[in-house]
Image 1: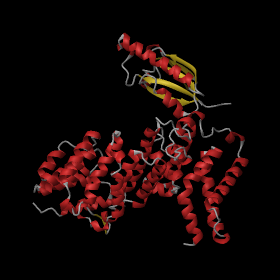
Image 2: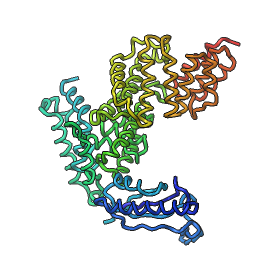
Image 3: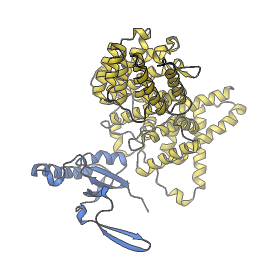
Image 4: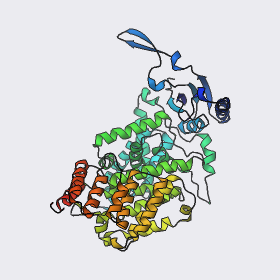
Length: 117
Length: 415
């Protein structure tokens, strides 16, 4: 299955800008470990993954009554802290959840992609 | 009941989970398996009385259910056939599961896969509980609905939703790596305990308890313990459940609630108390435990103090309070604090109990007020006791318990 892994919030992690250079290096190392753990696991592949700019750079697009409304900011306050995402191919939810433990202790949402094939 | 009916009841009770597991492994269709097996049981109930009970009743049901699934698959439209299938037997899980084999007992088992799938942490606890009863034990949906105090169609919809979620989210029919298994078994234990407490102390409705439903929760733990015999959380949970369950016949008299102190101890099931005592003596429970396992052990030891006291007066309240003190360090829940306050009152008198209750609140519960009322009444503060009873009665949603509280209040001496 393909899963969209959304890094929703800092969760138990200190906010990036408040981390010391050493802490930032340790956080970055965890992303490297996650890459390695996925690569080492049969049937698992990171198809895409990016860090995202902050909510100040986000734009929300809504269509209401046929009119497109474009507004400044993220879709909801709940996702203001969304810091990045992965698209991961994994055999099942259990295998993915195990790998996600390698990442920093963010709050994470996992959504399976629908296979349209 | 005829022999054929008996045979059918027995095989359904003993083999339902294994048949579901085998059908799931073969067809990977969580949406079809339960109905197919239900149809097979229905067919058996018609044919066995006239044709005789087959030599291998489980194999008969399996063949009939398999045929039903195949019939359904043949008539399905294309769109349906494209639906995602249950994820079965992922390669990478095999290795870890095999290392779980100990002394001739291979833990990798289809029933264990089924149990772990039904009690997956990504399912809501109530959904996991209902699904476990339905798929592992074969409890009819109507009975599960009664247990959780919802209409049958609501429960049927809840179970269907849970099955869709398993397939949609990619929850696998698999045994996880050895390192992850203990955590998952703790979720199974929590699921079973939720099932048990739902039957044991329902908050609303006319019945105080539905012992047969709690019995099913015990059966669920026994099934899992048959697969993972030494898992501390499950051993301790079984002991705890047996001890609570052993009092079922003495808790109610003529539809009225009977408090522990007033129960006829000859009506307790002493064979269950003995089994629980043996379970609690297992060496594994004396070793290092997870917080959940430790809290089950402590609650079971408290229950065992009551179960083995020859009479209410001879209860070792000093030991009970000591066990609650440790429990509060492991799991500081309001209900444990409340129970400790009751024990403190028994040991040191109502004033000490009231002190221990200070500041305790349990949201949506009438119990703190009920206990305070009882202790105030013992301390001779009749007005305050009456006010506390009024508060408890207003918050209580169980008819049997409300009747008990009303009787207690009305028995207070008039001011």
